[in-house]
Length: 292
Image (cartoon, rainbow, N blue to C red; front, side, top):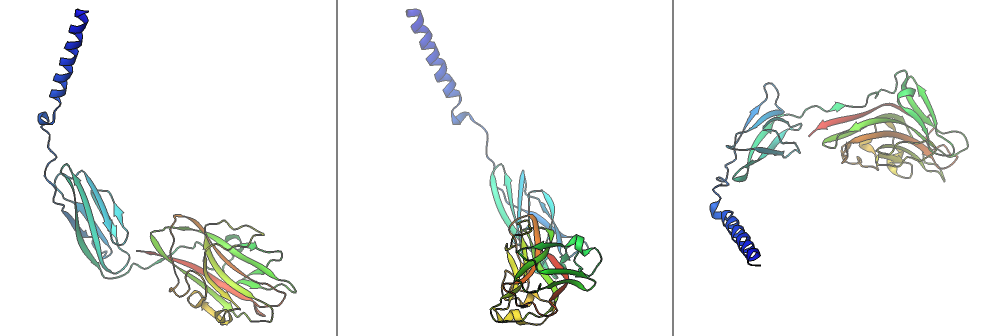
């Protein structure tokens, strides 16, 4: 029994010595001084919208860049692009052994980068448009869709309510701004007991036959509203009375990076011909992508 007690005492003394060896006083490591964040900004030659930024903070092991236009990076050196004219902030948060520091500089951009047209087949007067913009039946009776050398015509079948359209896929970047342009000709008419419509959508839902597409209306016209009775002859989006782009200079914004579908549809809810005698002809659909 005495032998066991000696072993227990030895174990206790050994544990106390190990604890003493691990006290904070014995640790000689230091976090280092609080950093002073520094970085350089260099304009790209012959390009007033792009700037090379480089983290020059002493001892920095991580760089977090954030620009006021939404640009971001985690590289030590990178190139930031500003698509719009104006004065923009560039913020750097630099991390060192002593902590982090955030510093800011500003750049001035003299002109916008021109927006790029991203619809792969925007001219609806070209051959094979029927293979690029697919017809879509959205009701029991489809609106008559005719592919012609002057564009795609939407007209009313005789003696029936109808709904139908065309669609095409586009890829969207949520960090860009978009402007929809729909060039159309025609004039809807207001008839007793009838409501006719001409609408443009850009949505993530995949268009399916026999289903009414109603995801994310961008620009709409309806004969129940005064704007639905305007004579169409050019880009109609700026004069739309409903939709996300109505009254906003055709601007559309998105929150998801994904495939979207541009859907152009027309129809009416009665046998009356609210789409007009000649119907509505669309000769081009453009989606302009603007870097922020």
